[in-house]
Length: 310
Length: 310
Image 1 (cartoon, rainbow over the protein chains, first blue to last red):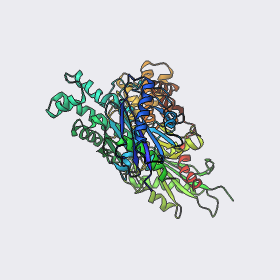
Image 2: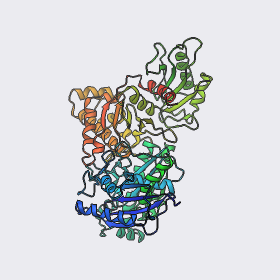
Image 3: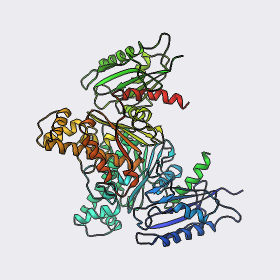
């Protein structure tokens, strides 16, 4: 008998991926596929992209077998009860019935939806940098800032499935306007685009996170200040989160999290400033322990971990 | 057979109280006692105050019976594993073995410790404004700002017992220095003393929250602005918390929460600004449904609710 396989789907603002993942968190070779998404895509084109990656992954199933379940991680917000998603950076999808669409592609297999940030957190807890933690925040610092929570060793999606939006925890002293309608949100301050925006307002001439990484490595003072500001904001938001839910670990991944080791060093320094609160300062801020397949592994965790606890 | 009774103890920065509480959340008449505490009290005097209120409450027990358990709510931070408390505003107690001290007064009865904010949250969920909520934040806005979380219908103390420190969630745009070592914390901005401090810096001549309430009622423009600033900060911190843990209800009590209905109106307006996030805006901000015995009822909930789920 072969190991049980989950079909994992990760839907985000720039791409959708699917793969088969076994119950040890390993991808089945040849099963992974990827298509672009993007803010300008029409709804039907996005549905087609999802169908293509799902069909590609399913072709890697052994003959006459089906996945034991489908796990979908999606950019938020979402509505768990309705099975719909409304990704902030994908305007064509508002209350889009993603669960029904995927279920139609994989008949008679249960489909579980979660915020992509929760999938990341589950993957860090299962096979990444947060193994053994009781309370963990998984974070992605990239085009946006997202996350998810494992509390008391279990996924904590919240009543609507949207818990873990660390990108919309505010940062003291910051008033950068945010797409959510608020201001001073971590995402507005410390995402790749947010950090580049601040640097450009202070004279930086590059336009991307990669430009900023190169300038930082070369010792450019504006780039140094910009990365320090972003890292400090990340540490302050983690301190707020640790005060609120009592965290063992914050595992930070995503493209912009690798702009420089100075980013997480600044975050740790900001956390250390909570001198009166040992329980906040004890939170370990660590780089993600996941490969770029982390979101897929996390989507598969929705299936495999639920089977374990049955 | 009489109803099971819990001995409830509430230890805070200004007073300690104890009472007997039945399994419906009702105080036993004549059992409640109170002593002052305060930042200047010596450790032995604080121990004596605790012993006096505990002994007073125990005298109300029916002959030949003992409480089924002792629940202690304490100002934080605390260390659940060690059974010690280090209340920020009570410098004489650092890692003070409060559980052992109380256990010595009530032999052979199990003692449970929790953050006072968690007790408030449990009481709101049990008999207050949060009945039926799945995810609830209980808040106290007073000399400080504290709180606690009920998540998925259960107490969420966190690994060290300190979850719920909403007073140390930062507020975007604010940089008021905080006793925790951070800045821009909700407690620094929106506590009674924090709000009075801001008003005085803008020309207000009163010195207390009561002065501010009177000036607000009389339409004093500085008092109006100060209460609006505090309420807005409360709403922004609740928005951050709702983004992070996905809240149904935030129930707000404490002396300064009653400075004016305008306080929670400003909080609701700040929450409504998260226009892109239905799941944040759906959070209901409501006044506490508890009497001034709420902290004692919550401490008793530690005992009675644990017995129910056994």
